[in-house]
Each structure stands twice: as structure tokens, then as C-alpha cells.
Image 1 (cartoon, rainbow, N blue to C red):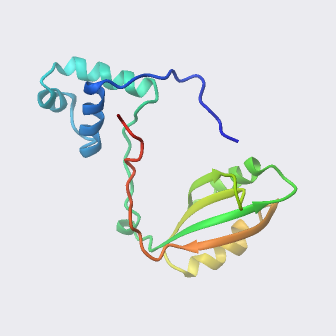
Image 2 (cartoon, rainbow, N blue to C red):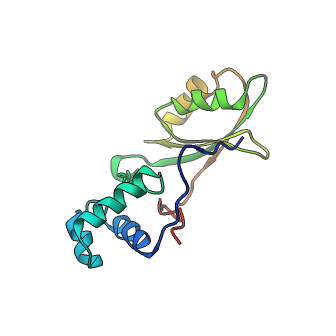
Length: 160
């Protein structure tokens, strides 16, 4: 089930908006004055545009964690098949587990796909048997271990 946020208005990003987003992608700590200088406009204008982009949910500035830098060495994709309970409810319980950093209700062979980060393989047994397998409604679990991370990039939303 795809949920659309009907409260957020859809806006068109003009060339200046796109430049602001691109600059903030490079340096999310850039001040309005720095952005204004690079764009050749007033800082108040940049501030107003950023506020409009954030209020419309077209953009938000966030910090992104580097998993390896803070000791996570195992990345797993965990597919879950659900039976006897709505997938959305199971997904909510999975989302509460601290090791799980992404949960998606999907179509296809599985009902839910999650991404999990662990410090080492010793945590895997505990996570699967103690935490995930005990959630009511889970029919089966299938894990895929990331052998190599080819792309780690949160700049996925197109801005043009």
C-alpha cells in the first residue's frame, strides 16, 4: 500500500531552488550568507526559499551516519513474509528494533523488506531468533548479507 502525503503541496523547483539543494547536498552546514554569496543573491531570499522548500517537504537538511565509521561491519537485507496479520503492523514492530534502519512494505515475493546494521556477525543470531522471529505474524525470514557496498548515497531524489 503506497501512502501519499496529501497535506504537502506539490511545488516546482526552479533553477535557483535546484542550485540551493545542490549546494546543501555538498555542504549541509553552509550558512544562508555563504549560499547567497555563491548564488549572487540576498541571504534573506535564500532563507525564504529554504524555508519554503522545507515547509513543502520538497527538501530537508539532515545528518547522515557513516555505518563503518561508528563500528557497524555487517549490513543485511532482510525480507519478511507475513501471514495472519497486516504487513503494516508487522512493519511497525520491525521499525522499533534499534538494528533496523529502514523498513518498507513491498509487493513481490516478500511483504516487507528491511535494512539492518550490526556490529558483527555475533549479533545476527540474537537479532533473528530473539527479536525478529518472535514478532507475531512473521511466516518466514530471508537474509541477504551485503558482501560489498557498491553505492552508499542518500542523494537519491531527482531535483530536476
